[in-house]
Image (cartoon, rainbow, N blue to C red):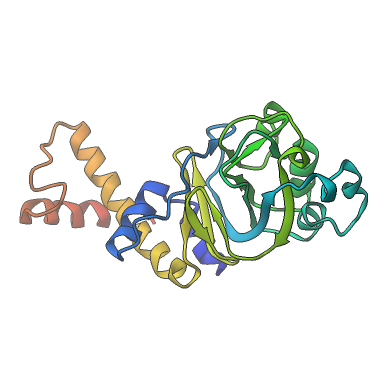
Length: 236
């Protein structure tokens, strides 16, 4: 992903991205059932680095597996690239935690842009206080080993009913998390900036008492002219 694309996406909303994707026929890119652990954080943007869990099998998943430095969960935390978003397939099951505050802290200090699971995190209050955006379904105290078995790193996964491929661009804000197919990220970023500018204009006019008729969507010539004048007078 280009640095300029990242910067543009950090200035737009997941709602705007959802509309831009819908125009291209992509209707199922919003990760279902996840929410930010803390609201008001900067918009999360990064390329997907994935971790996949399957149902745990007790004879293969005792607590001793964490002693292996190659354990997929531990290896994922140590290899997720700086600026990426770790996306975890926890089978939409939050009965056991996908990770906790120590792993989230390690991702943060390594420069990872965020972490998303369709399950739950333990130590949720501690993760919420970290300077890394984190999204999950609900808090969960039990260790992931009681339910999940980490099996794959950086493979295609499902997260909250959305297909996530390594390298897809992930954007998250207070509304939730969107998945942008990698090949669309640059053009969507440009379009979303334009859409955001238009919506800022519309919001300003509506708050001043304007009707949405002819304004939203912009079908009247008067509104189009006013928008062009408004854009011309905005500081660069």
